[in-house]
Structures are given as C-alpha cells and as structure tokens.
Length: 472
Image (tube, rainbow, N blue to C red; front, side, top):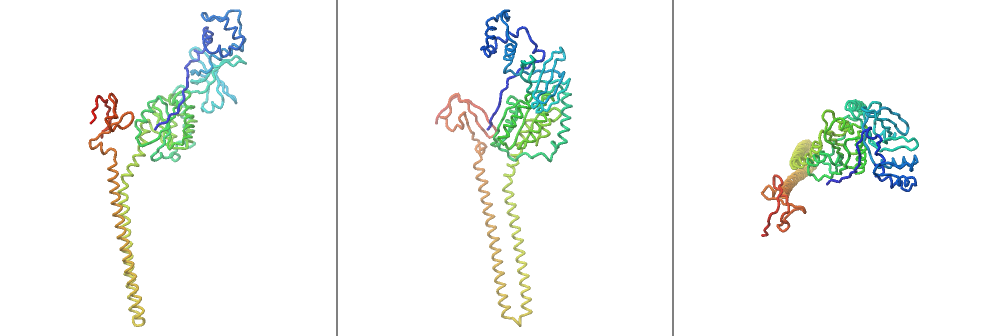
C-alpha cells in the first residue's frame, strides 16, 4: 500500500538581464489583475479612463502618484516565483537579512537581492563575490526607497569546481564530528513493514524502487519532494518532518544519477544533519558518477541506485524465509541434544548407585557380627530405594522419547499442512488463476465480453481479452 503526500509549486526561470524595464511594461500591467486590486483608488480609476490599450500610452492629462504607481508595479509581480541565475558582484551580511547583487557577466545587467538571515543560515551557504548562483524568489519594489529587488527563498551554487571545493570542506567537517563513522550507524531493521519514502513523483527512481521491491506486505508512506534545484533542500526537510510524525520502521531517500551540480541538495549540511537525527534507520539510494553524496555517506546505509535500495530491503525478508525453512532441522537437532544429555545423566546416576552399594557392602562386612540385623534392614532399604530411582529415570527417559516422537509427528503434519495451503501448488499442477478489475474471476458469468483479464500461471502472468463465453 502506498500513501502519497505532495505539494505543487509554480515557478518561472529568468536571467538578470530579462528583468530590465521595457516600453510594453504598462500594457502588460493593465491586462493583469492589478487594476482590480487597486480599483478603489480614485487615481487608478482616472488612470484607467485615460489609458489607450492599442498604443499602451497614457494621455498627458492623467498622472499617477508614486505610491499608486509602485503598487501597480508590485501587483503585477504578486504571487509569481522567479528563478534567476547570475554572478555575485557584492554581498552585505546583517543581523536580520543578507543583501547581495547578481549580474550577467556578458552585459553587466545587475539585480539587487535579499534573503532573510534565518533562511540563509538554514541553507548553509557562504556567499562571496564572483560566485555564480541560482536564486529563487519573488520580485518587488520597496516603496520607501523605490529599489527593485528579488526576495530570495532558495539559493543554489553553480559551477562544478566551486561545488567540489565546498563539498570537500564540508565533508572534512562532518567527518571530524563522526558523522561517517561505522560505529554510529544503525543496522537496517529486519523485515520492515512500514517504510517512509522520499523522492520526486516524476523521477524514474520511484518506479525502479517500487518495481523491484518484494511483495511482502509492506506499507509505503510516500512524500513527494524536489530532488534538485534551489528548492530541493527545503522540500526534502519538509518531507522529513512529515515522515518523522509517521514513525516508519525505515526511511528511504531516493533519486537517480546526475552531475555534481544537480546532486548538490544531497551535499547540504542541514539535510545531512536532519538525516542523522532521524529517529528511524535511514537508507539513501542516490545515483552518482564518481563521488558518493554526503547524505549517502552519513546514512545508516548508502547504495548507488534505487534498485539497490529495494534489494537491500528484500534481503532482510529473504533471511526470515531461510530461518523459517531451517526451523524444523533446528528443532530436531535440539531434541537430540536434550536426549543425549538425559542419557548421560542417567548413566551417572547408575554409576553413583553402584558405588553406594559397594560402600554399603563394605560397611556390612565390617560390622556384620555386631549389627547383623540392623545392617540387613539398611541394605534392604538401600536396594529398594535404588530400584525406585532406576525405575523413575527409566520412566523419565521413556516419557521423553514419547514426547519427542509426538513433536516429530506434529512437525510432519505441519509441513503437510503448509504444503497443502501453498497458493502456488495448484499453479504448479497446471491450474491457472484468473483475475479481472473486481478481483478473482471464479465463474464464466463474472466475465464480460471484451473485458481484459489477467491469467496467473506457475511461471508468470499474461493478459487476455474475452471474445466469447459458454456457460456449462
């Protein structure tokens, strides 16, 4: 069973130069919802009355106030998310926010940006001049200063050389804290029944994992997340938060292979720490060409493909099947050991009784003339007691043999019962299992002409379509 939780986020991709003002700006603004948003303003009504939609010009008789114009501009960008790529030309860090400027190296078009300090620290970035980045956020003009800026929600570093250097520095830091130590890692649970799964709903990784996972009655709680791009880290952290409340037996994080730049979300410090802090064991299956991601290194188990992740889970269930198969042999072996131990104890008791008899005979010989009657009575009592003990141990041995035979017979009957109820047995004998949309088809009356059915044979399935039917 698979449960799905997801969110959809709309975004656009822009370069810094494409945000420059154009003469057609007013024409686009007037076709947007912004007119309705501020239609209660007298200035806006006057503006609309004097606007010519054919030429995009405003008659000289109409003038907007600065605040009205800026509200008009901001309403045109309201609710839209942009992605802009550029090179950092300046950075200023403050307590509440980080202000930076990006530019296009080719034509020197600049764009002012800001990101709140809490969000900046969460991303684990270190912005500097000359660094090429990709910024995702919303655009607005700040009315008190008239400054146009992009308010960033997510930032991703571009360029493999920079990413590799940053990754190696973080790897050394996390290694020093013991994040990659084998002693810290937890073993994967045996026979996990509830699995938390995080990946993109559009990735091939999801299909590969589900297709290769054994049908062992596992429950999969799937949460969609972006696995690359500026928003990937934030969405992965949100998915972890959702599954933390679900308390799965095992957490699985997947994505297919890619370049170092596309995999940078899995080299994020905040994500690595969140995976290590997750209450359940973590299995990460991220494809990689050369370097294993930091998330894979820090996980309790890291594998190179989603298929390998499914096989690792299947392996724990295969071990359980082997233990069930070996249980009868272990039971018989344990019974034999118990019987051998009982025999050894019985032999020891007989030896002790023989020694006691010899000692008693010696005493009788020494004192036969002095205490003939008393010794005779004592000897008779010893003989009787010995016989009772021997009889008791013989009865115990016989009872044990009988119990062992009973258990062996019960085990044989259980094996026969398991074989009789094996669902694949009729298939191996040449029978077939027919199923349709509503489940198993046991009668010709349940099948409809033209209906597509699935036939299960001993070595696989095949699909058929009902062309005719005859009721016997």
